Amino acid sequence: MLFKSFLDSPCGFRFMFDSLQLQSSCGRTRLLETELMTDAAKIKDCYEKLHNAYDSVYGEGKNSLTKLDTLDHRLMCLRDITGTLSRLNKDVVLDDIDLFEIKYLGLLCSSVTDMVNDLGLKDVQLPNLESVISILDPDGMKIESFYVYDSYSKDLGRIRTELKKLQAAESAGKNDGATDDRIVDLVDKEQLLESKIREELSGKLKRHSKDLYAAIDGMAALDILLAKAQQIKKMKMCFPQISSDGRTVYKGMFHPQIVDIYDKENITALSATEKKKFVPVDIDFELEPVTIIGANMGGKTVVLKMTALNQLLFQFGFGVAAGSAVIDIKDNVMVCIGDEQNELSGLSSFAGEIKAVNQVLRSADAGEKILALIDEPARTTNPIEGTALVTALLNVLKGKKLSVLLTTHYNIAGDFFRRLRVNGLKQGRMDYRLQETHSGDIPHEAINIAESLNINPQWIAEAKKELERQKKK
Image (cartoon, rainbow, N blue to C red; front, side, top):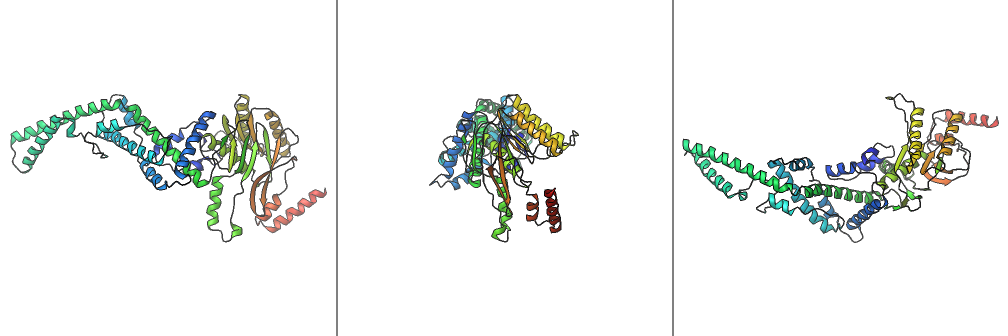
């Protein structure tokens, strides 16, 4: 599964991508094409490099922010010239623009390498392109432009010198027919020589095409690495550990997008009591079904989104939004959240969500080790059938090789799965923290929540009366 395939997941993954301070289009393209990591050794290596980069820039006693800004500005100059390199490998003779692009890449890679060494980014390895630079910069001027220089050929230098003299004479009105013919002849010779030189340069550069590709890929990877480190610092994220026993444990888990929303709203808050604060969540689970219950608007869905988001961040090598995290590696992350109605295929909300959940079962039956986040399955049907469907689903999931967090507003009987309850809205503030519970009873807090939102008091009063009448029946 590629990074880009998760961007539209309802867990907030796109927000994390958009908030990355990537400097180059190459970095963005490379990240979007990154594969979900499922190999423990690869994930470990990824985080070791990220941790080293973070320490090199933000570690204690480091004063590297100015250097980092300079490096970021250089990475902004990285351009994707793989099209030019592809033509080079096909023995196409490159023109001056193509040769300029390669020379610029060589000079950029050289300067970025110096900055990387200065910052102490020991895990970043870029190819040495000095040979490429010397081919395209024979005079050693280190100027970021290209021209078929006189030093490529003594004959070219002689022809250009004679041309200048004749053209100067022509400008002074000291020309005749013979001079005009001589100028045309010299221009033709100059162009033939330049074409021959470009052909020779293209042949020499082809031998370095592997290093040129590596330079683009290496600087794009560096761009991603630094952006991830900056994001960890800015959002106060953690470096996760890899679970060795199939158990995932989050301490102080949060959702960066919701925190960002709260921070923006708090700017205009008129008093301290109006300010919102995200309450971090602790959660742990293994290869088992876990139900999460709570009143509507109680924060159940947010818990699913946080868990899905952090699993993806972990397996794409990002910082994790928690105080600490030990995370089990999954083959896939399947998120069934929101209205699954599909007007194009003619599916109702119920049909859409049932098909989505069925895909989870198919993946489990195929032996995939997955994390499934399922938000209130069968919520759009009647309570009797809905309860039956959810109970049956939990029974089917029991013993499968997958972790399932499932929210529900149905009272599900049985002791073959764990139950967690979200604290929900308390004194006008959302509390996403979870409590272990052995009861499947769903808290009846809807009226209290509606009242806390300053809903029409007559409506609330009538609802309370109706609730009391139902209790007496």
